[in-house]
Length: 123
Image (tube, rainbow, N blue to C red; front, side, top):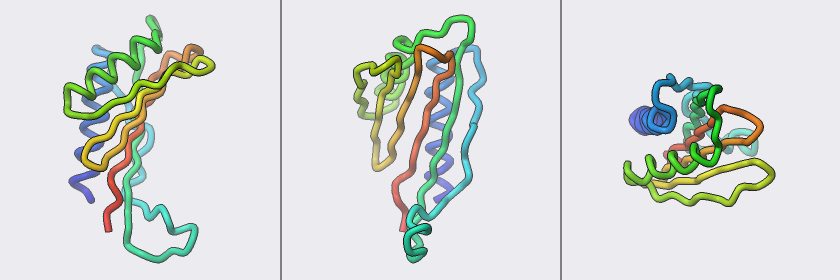
């Protein structure tokens, strides 16, 4: 699980650095492996890691460019991407690779870009 967690964290940071060069991405959420079913029945060793990284440039916020750049960076790293049409100022792209999932979010009302990833379920 630690190898998967480190891989995902490194991917999120690398994409964030590509999308907003010159800014240092910040890991805002990384609680470590969790059992997503624990609240339901608490059984089973299945675990998953969810990590969130934020970045952005307050001087030049452009959510369309951020999402486009994130999709290109993810594709260049071997991810399959799908850019969603903007909805109420919310721009996003989703990406998958080898059971890992990433979602990138940007808003017209905020200069931050949020990248959230999840490892495959490990049993």
